Structures are given as C-alpha cells and as structure tokens.
Image (cartoon, rainbow, N blue to C red; front, side, top):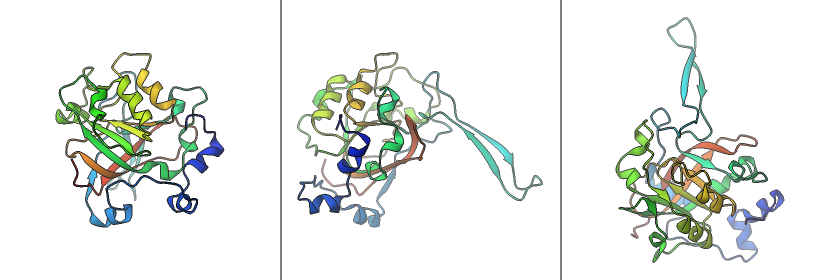
Length: 253
C-alpha cells in the first residue's frame, strides 16, 4: 500500500461486495458481521474524554468557551471549541511526518470501520515483538495494544506522564509485515517520549498503516471486534480526534 496514489486508494478500499464480485480473498475475522455486531448492542467506548486527557508537551490544550447560554438573555447555548488535531483519542495520517504523505481527506470512510484485534501486554516499557507471536492476525485488520497505560488510567489523568508504554520498532515492523491497516495504543504516542526520530511513526505511516493514539482500553478484554473510529472531515489534516468504539467481541482469547 505504501506506493498507492490517491486514485489507487479507491481501488484498494473498494466496498466488500465489489471485492467479492472480483473474486478477491477477503479476511474473514471470527467476529459477527458488522450489522449483527451493531444489533447485539455490545459496544465499548474506547475514547478518552478530551477535557481530561493529557496533552503531549507543546500541543495546544483543549478549551471550551461559551459565547451564549440559556438563561443569560439568549434563546440558545453556543460554544467555541479550541483543540489540537492530536487531542485525546486521535488518528495520525501519513502527512503527519511525510512531506508527500496522504492527509485525512485522502481516505474513504470505510477505512475507519474495520475488524480489529485487541492484544494485552504487561510488564514492559515498549510493546515487544514477542507480543505478536502466536497471535493470528488477519491482513487488513487493526491491531490495538492494551498495556499498563490502560491499567493505570493514564488517558484519564490530565498530567502528562513521560514514562508510558510505547511500541517498539521491531513490533511496528512486524505489524506492517502482518498486513495491519491500523495500529493503536493506549497513550498519546506510539513512540518513546523525546525520541525525535519517531521511528515507529515512520515505520507505520511510510507503509500506510494509520496510527490510532490515546485509546482507553481499560474495560476491554483481548479478542476480535469491529472498530469504528471516524474522524472529522477536514481537508489536508495530518491528524484528527475520533470517537472510537468497539462492537461485537469474539469469545477467543
């Protein structure tokens, strides 16, 4: 996918029925179909509240200013929101670090509705490559890592912590080799703090693997789900906040 142009994106992300008509072999994850999953009402909100989520040092903080309010001489409430594109739970796109990388509006909505695998990892400073060993990952899935960041509730603490669990470069490389479409983690960066070379961002985004950061996976069990993480529609955006949810968990470990 790394070399696909904008015109190629539509071909790569054709709807599933069109691909079946062409005889393509699609991943068959062991979760119900999306429609059945939604009907089950088994839904987990994995988004962090923007008003208490930590900000990466240097990013603009979230603020909400009331311009008008009911009971204050106005017939409506009206507010102005100010926030950075990497606020709370958000997606990074290739244009975040690549001069010719694709921005948000290069991707169709279906890219943000995908089967996902949640993998729990404990007792590490960075998710090791071994976390992906003996795990059946299907091409085109999202891979979400639940670490001690979630167990400690870091996305519900507005104070930035520079000692968080990141993703190791070897694990990122294996995610690419396994054909992941998106990789997510439960703090606000997949890279170690102050590693300005951003090796994990580079490995993933250069291969068109989107990055979902700032997840709250504290109430999520390992397994397969459907992930829905639609960003705001913003032209040329390098990142955007999302409301991320998981639906229809499988019973596998």
